[in-house]
Length: 253
Image 1 (cartoon, one colour):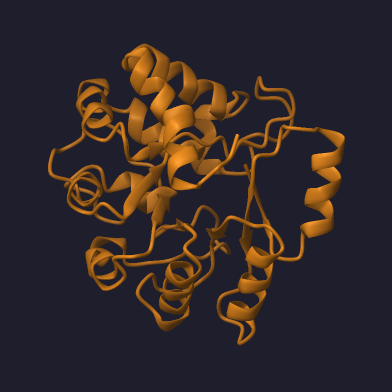
Image 2 (image 1 turned 90 degrees about the horizontal axis):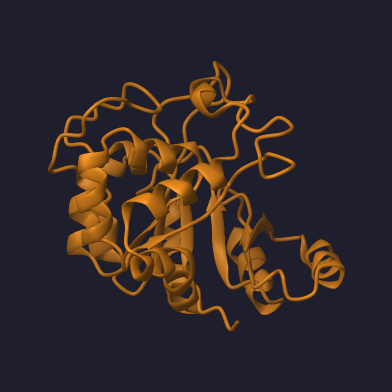
């Protein structure tokens, strides 16, 4: 699966030709604050994209820009993957799709939209005591977190396990993780979102994200896959690494 700009069709085709059978689909993103956003996303779907994402812009998750994207995703019957972040990683980065603690209203308002939650705030909110104060909280998880509740209560919300954010949530409290994965084995989808160049942490990897220094020099994808294998049964592992994505993203392979 590839996440790309809406204008990346030629690049996607080049990768598909170079690696036959390896690219099963791609998601398209564009600046949702621009007036032509809906037209560009629609064009991308007509050109073969199978979803929107990752949508990562300096807007509120319940703001008019994102609402237009949610409605369009429902109209086109494609999923939308959203980057939720309340705390900047660097002084100039800013925040993205803010207000996840109140996101239940969007799930109710757009029941036909398939939402894929991703990134810092989505995963930090597995704990009921998250206060939007750090990007990647550590220590024991307090049961009753918003993410856990929304995944249970809303059939149109799924969770993307990728990046340091997903790995951090799964690794900080193994006892909680076991139950969480069991509860949501049909709603969670593995992703890498890892910039390492060799599958072992080579290259910049997480070095460009100071808050994720615990995984510097490591392959995020490999770390998360290993954690999943050690925590769940083979049938659940296959769901999270294969079956759920094929069902939710409508992959054909």
